[in-house]
Image (cartoon, rainbow, N blue to C red; front, side, top):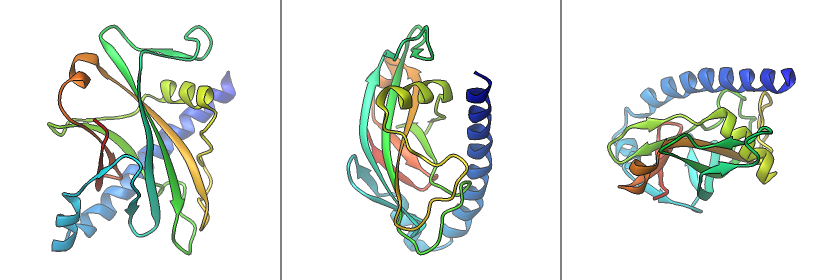
Length: 179
């Protein structure tokens, strides 16, 4: 169990540091008029999204769940009034250089009001084990031409999720409409 705890801590630290790197890169990228037009584009599930001319990201599947795996053994159950939104993605390095582990694309769930939701690490880990599709890099660079699968799970109000539009925002730049 301590090994899993160490992995979770490393993932949290990587997400924290990765978001900071992307934020500073975003503010510089937004200086051009072309970028502001591009930011308004909304992609569909299963359509490739290019991030920073380095990574091609595809949201491949979206599921709404109440339980992931066995909640009594490393599974996860939605809280009262909550629902779990599971997202499967692929990330491919389309550049000629490795993408550093703290520079890989990040994902947030966003509602139509612009409220963003971070993923639930415990639920994401349980979903990765249950689906057996997650081969993402935790502390390794993503080398050119390599594609990895990733999963993220977000817990949100079931009532809120039933209403309105929902998106996955990739690295604070591009949106994919999931609902």
